[in-house]
Length: 226
Image (cartoon, rainbow, N blue to C red; front, side, top):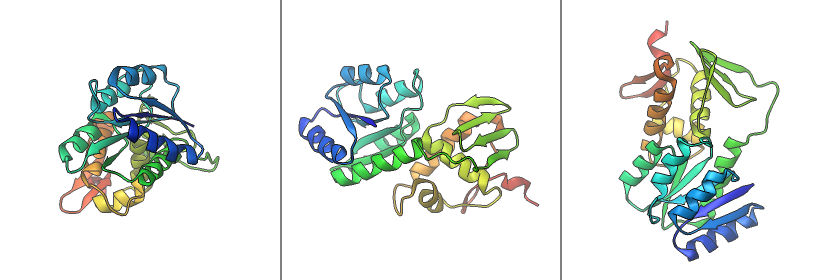
């Protein structure tokens, strides 16, 4: 697996590279926006770690460019400043799969990278069922989601969230529960879930049946429960 680490601080890049290489990953380093944009445009990476505060184009601009470009499903983890909630929310809205706040533990980042890679390149099982909800269909083994037969582009987290909701239709899940079940986090920023639900609704359009159950959480097709 090839990982792009983009940060204007060479010390950060070196430490992250050493930890990722210990996990058997190949690392490409870039130190500014233009070099990072060029690396992303080539589409030869399996995951990108992007610093939000990198000289422009910054991590958020680059994230938006990836999601609207020829390789929209490239997994992205953003590095954000500690306490800058706006950066995290904006980054998630731009299409990031995950984020890690600075200062961070290199081992934590390595674990986040491994987690996102597992979800982006899962072990395929032939017996995984196809999930359906209205005109939405998810083929888990192929990691393909369609609406009325037309394929839609989803990030790894968006796909997993949709599959989880379809597999548990009409059950209400709090944001804490979704964070644990879909992200595998025992704690974290609950806005991560909120933003991903918003992104998923936008991509599904009128076909979405993700209902908000006020004070409780989210459910697929709850409004049509018996």
